[in-house]
Amino acid sequence: MRRSRTIRLTLLAGSALLLHACGGEDVDSVDVVIPNLAACVARFGAGAQADCERTMANAQQEHTSSAPRFADLAACREATGSDCEEAPANRASDKALAPPTTGSIAIPVLAGVLVGRMMGSGAGRVTTPLYAGRAPRECPPGQSAALSDCAPAGSRSSGSTGGRYFYSGGSFAGSTAAGQRGAAAFAPSPAMATTLASSRIGGPATVARGGFGASARGFGSSS
Amino acid sequence: MQRVESPPRSDWQARLEEIGLTYHSAGVEPETGAGGGLWWHEASHWRLTTAEVDALDDATVELHARCLDAVDHLVNREPDLLREAFGLPAWFADYVRRSWQRQDPALMGRMDLAFDDATGAIKLLEYNADTPTLAIETAVAQWVWLQATHPGADQFNSLHEKLLARFAVLAPLTAGRPMHFAAFADSAEEWAHSTYYRDLAGQAGIEAVGIDLAQVGWNREAFLDEAGARIHFLHKLYPWEWMIRDHFGPYLAEDRCGVLEPPWKALLSDKAILAVLWRLFPGHPHLLETVPGKTRINGGNCVQKPCLGREGANINLLRAGLTMAATDGPYAPEDARFVTQALAKLTQQNGWNVLIGSWVVGGEAAGIILRESQAVILRDNSRVVPHLFN
Image 1 (cartoon, each protein chain N blue to C red):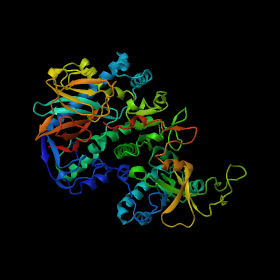
Image 2: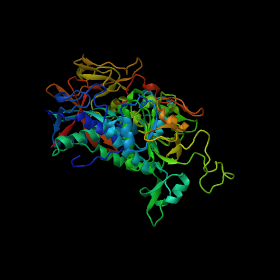
Image 3: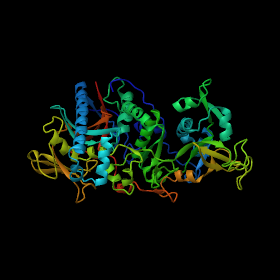
């Protein structure tokens, strides 16, 4: 009011993401990992160029805040099994973590964006930044399988022959099969599958869901 | 106030979609050209004077302070009214009192004001203190419109920066734990607003997590998100009067998570507060005479509205005791509570009535958004129009 100002929007500007189906018949029924802008445009069509640019930029920004933090690159690589990069220590918790000499921390690099299938009534798609890592439950380097509850490094669980494993925040998110280029079909972990199926009511047996919202039937809750 | 018709931006739909306002035409194919939109409408705008803006600012701050007085009065002096006049179940009345007495922080609210530019009278019609919408339209859409069309003019609008500042005040209270923002994922308007608040909270240093309201979980000890993480703080766009009827409602009163808006806001968003305000501050220049029930006051020039109505539904407007306008809607079941409020005059020009939505963030006035309609009762489908002043 009464002065010029700049409005900075990050999430909201990206929420308009609809990525309308174009060409590919499975584009609305499969979750995919998109490694880069070119793969996004290849999958969703040239008309989605602006949406794709925004999606990738938002994912990078969100990734920078949601990725796990480590004091240095070596610790990051060891813990995540991922390529890592330095990031400025912006938050108070980052500053506590960062070595005083560098003032920066390390985070895994963004490996791609999970773009979920179109939600009901064309409400858009879930998008989540992902980083790549080792197979879930594989022992970090230097950790013995005999002493910890993990599988020896390099071993592959059955059925996963050279596929890629992806993480979101600190959690295993899912995998893609080997040899896929561009947008790769994504097999979500159970937790991620629940997140993606955001219209589904229910969940693990010990957690009751759907306890809010019933009173809204036939109403709009705005005022 | 002056109503001005001016050409909409040629690409106004795209400009709105860029800022996340995808629901600009209420699901109807947007009208192009001079017709402007159906929900967001920029083929007209209203011009205010600096004096009018100052008066609206002062009235909003004054009314919000009196509203807090009324909540304090109810909670501490007439708690029986929470059950008798507001119809609250005992457990929720206790929760409301507790939340007020320990000063649970609030974020925002929007008053609907009747402003008569002929006399300068500003009157409170109601206070959407719990689940106000139109925040994106106010804070972002009309500001972007102003920059594109009238870069030299000013606007009564500090909603964006006041919300950002308010989240920065709330941030240390979260002690580094995330805040979950719940909304219906299949409602474009709600989800966009929830996303906007997440955006602001994130910029203020709060870890903001979005969740579909129906996906909120309860494991008998805590509320959980879809990944099974505990919800310590819940921001909702779902009114308290519905939350308390839902299966999980009573679990909120176990105080396992903080809620925005806090429970005490349920008293302000119930129109029964308008009768309490008039009883406590009779003759206040910004209040309209209001009494409980469906009756006739003010020489039969009055409006009967349901205490928990929304969007201008189920309202009867009387002049000289005769019903002149009425709206239908789902908010008037047989046991619904009503108030009757003296009829206020809205500014009208060329057949268009204008209603002023005036924002409160913290205790401060944070700008306005206007709605205009040719009908005397403004509804959820009334146009949202921008304004400026100079």
